[in-house]
Amino acid sequence: MTRRTTLIGTIVLVVGAVALWARHSSSPMVNEPLVRSAQLATPTTVEAWRAAYPSGDRPVGREAIERARSVGDAAAVRWLAELAAGDSQVGAVAGAALGGIASPGAAATLAELAAADGPVIVRANAARALGRSGGAEQVGTLATIAAGDGEPLRVRQEASLALGQIGDGTATPALAAALVRAETDLSAEGEQLRISLVQALGALGTPAARSALVRHVEQTLSPTERAFTQRALSPRVQR
Image (cartoon, rainbow, N blue to C red):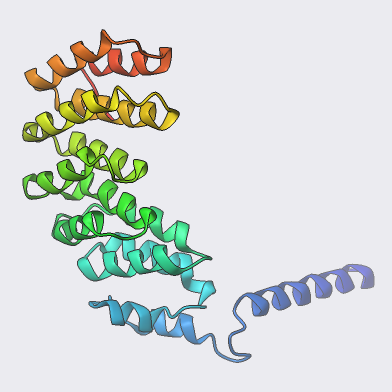
């Protein structure tokens, strides 16, 4: 081994060590957030999640968020909602994790968040999660949101699609009525809403849902909306 090779190897090791220290330098000797996360059992309250991963612990931020998504209990849901609503650095990541929860045990908490007067990112992702976590008990809440003309577009879209995933036909009247009302909205947002309603009705596949779609496809629609409606009328529809 030449002296030049040895020198290069030493430089690489030093640079690597400095980079590693910079990533985990909350303390020059001990990375306290990582130690806490390694020692702590699964948090069972929102306060426990906050204590385990306090604001500013970026080295474990995304790992903690993914952990909360996989745990998926009520405390994890509320902690993710809190991050999504108020953390400018990881809020979007936390919102996506909230939307990815699939936990029937958290359905009531998700429904509460979806219906509350909170940030759109929280409400929309809570509604989205209900597509995999919710059941008959949440259909009424989601139907009210989907049919609510004053609700934010994204929240209505996610609520509609969640109803299609749950597959409870009792949501058909609310979705069909919302589709009729939305036909008078000629904006791009109106079309986006109608497409979500169409997808939900197609996923439900009840006779009343198909009747609503047959009626809708006869309206004056853009090529995109017509394609979605025709697909919703096909025998097999999946979100």
